[in-house]
Image (cartoon, rainbow, N blue to C red; front, side, top):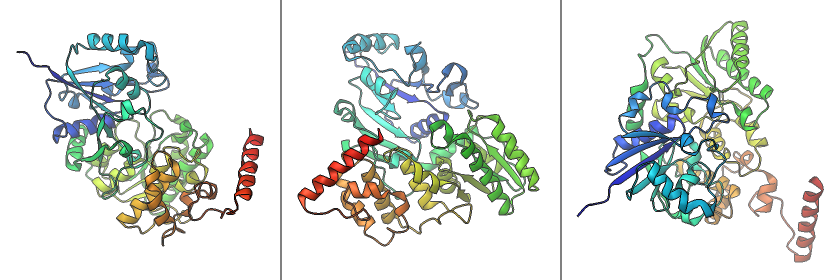
Amino acid sequence: MSTRRTTQIFCASTLYGAVTIAAALDSGCFGTADRRILLVTNNAAVPETTPPLDEAEGFDRLRGRFDSVLSWNETISPLHPGGWTPRPSDLPLLQRHLRKLWDLGDDRVELALESPQVTPALAIAQLLPDAPITVYADGLMSYGPTRNKIDPLIGGRVGRLLHLDLVPGLAPLLLAEFGAVAETVPTEAFTKVVEELTGPAAAEDGPALLLGQYLAALNLLTAAEEEELHLRMVRGAIALGHRRLVFKPHPTAPDAWSRTLVREAADLGAELTVEDRPVLAEVLYGELRPALVVGCFSTALLTARTFYGLPVARVGTGTLLERLTPFQNSNRIPLTVVDAVVPPLEDGESAAAEIGTDQLNDLVAAVGFAMQPKIRPELREPAVRHLSGPLAERTRHHFTRRRLTVLNLPGGIPLPRHPQVRRLARRALRLRRALKR
């Protein structure tokens, strides 16, 4: 009697994600399988002009962990992976077509996805409806709540959340409403995979490494503001005595920014070089042995601090926390974590809170509740505890007064208790919103 094959499909859009998957495989986070497929998705605005991760430098050293590498972009061409989901009426046809196209037959399929609440992961989950799902998180967003409500037919299939232990002791909030069990990918496995991609280490003392994120592309800053943010990194590092700087720009950031930084460093008596290879920041940690790593709220700040023991500093988190909209923007938790645990580069920035593990969990829970009170109502208790506690004033900049008021949390504007007055207040608020439109 024949037995069904087990095929594991791992979906990845970045080299960082592929490294995380490789580390999870090496450490036994996934069971045995007859076949393992890496499904590459290129979510760039113009995929035709941006190389996919399987063409990145060093990927060949990861390829051997998979029996085959497939392209989601080719599968759904000419549609864009970030904007297409199948229509419900087309699902039965497309489900059969996908199994035939990928030679799945009647295989038992297991899925590993990045973000099942959005495309392309959502579409893939819909087209393989019987597959149990493991979500792997390759960054700080795993510590935040799920950004929107997920269809229970998808969320109910998520059994685990695999994540890197970027902040030891901090519990992820992502997908916990479905009972997903959080499991850490061993740090040693991750750094060992990174070593496979790393060249020889520098013999001399390392430079200050500045990390660009291209926040203007996310509409979090204007191009001019982000250029000034990078200049602040240069000035701050030089003010601390660093005379050799390396800037790692975002792959899609304008070249003009880098040239401006080179000139600024030279004017201040330092030398800045631009690392234009599309490599992971963690690869540079091994090659450069930086004396300092500076960024805004990049996950790489926490890998430097926690995995490699490097000094780190942040720039601009306070400004971004003030202007980040809407409040439930999924970048808020990464900003909160970096602002809370990483020291500032400049004297003008708020100092990192001297915060213990329990207090940090309560802070993240409080921000998470304020972001998604309907998805995670049980977080109200730790939110009230934090906002009433000794660190409330030092972390108040993580919240807006309006949000605290609407949710009736400590720190908000006290609302009148009389029902008629409250109705009038709500009516005035609705009128104000209508006028703003």
